[in-house]
Length: 330
Image (cartoon, rainbow, N blue to C red; front, side, top):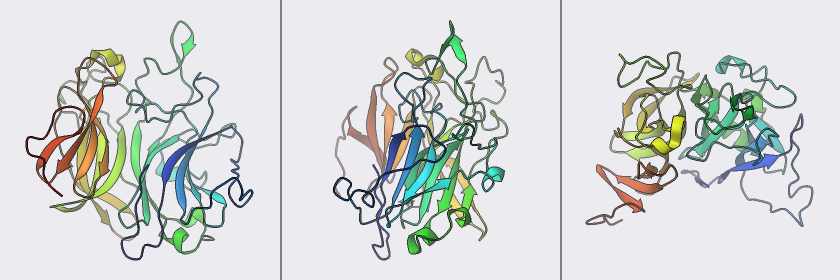
């Protein structure tokens, strides 16, 4: 869970979490407004993802938060907001409104959108949400012996891009129409191998398949000013963890500056912030000083990941693998 307080006036606080609901054309949530004795009334709006239970998958749905499922969440995950009056409202994607911002019609199809939202993060000032969106999280194809599921799935072909939605007007006035909130697309990959570290190697048999994934966008203040951190496999490398099968993609941390031209946001000065050629890293999250990330600490076990932290130019373990020789104070 990630919290951010408005820097200027402590206007509100947000909580990002994932909910699981049954498939229906319009999700309906009971809140404190319906039953104050059962449900807590928060003192701030909530941003959350709602996902449908997927009958194709035995465990009821994949949110894309497992290190082995980063590139393949279930379809139907939407970005919603619990308002101060106890009602909920969809923010993204809205069919007929956001169609031009995505690479596959959002639907819905049979009451479920065709894409999937993941990893919402709140900006430092509390008035913007960064999130990722898979364009074509459609039905899984059989991968072996007529079995359908994630086991050896490479990832959705159109990949996942970063987006931002400015929710300030909705905070100031809960009646402000959600379809008028500014949404900006921050990344767009038209060529899987455009940013490959080894561009001469273009065969899908030698590079990971599935679209390029951008995930975990999170603002952080650095010596270069305020930057957007995110993880991506845009370098198109496999890591050395053979236990992950086709899922052993190499994710690296990138930084970029968010520029605002008045009509939309865009990323400029995108840089690779660290280089792993053997394992992978995911889920950058800001700390009071620096930021933390999840680091794949072994090439032998798919889910052995530890927490690392970055403070300025210093890099070291926060939990798990290794130790600081002289841990910085503060």
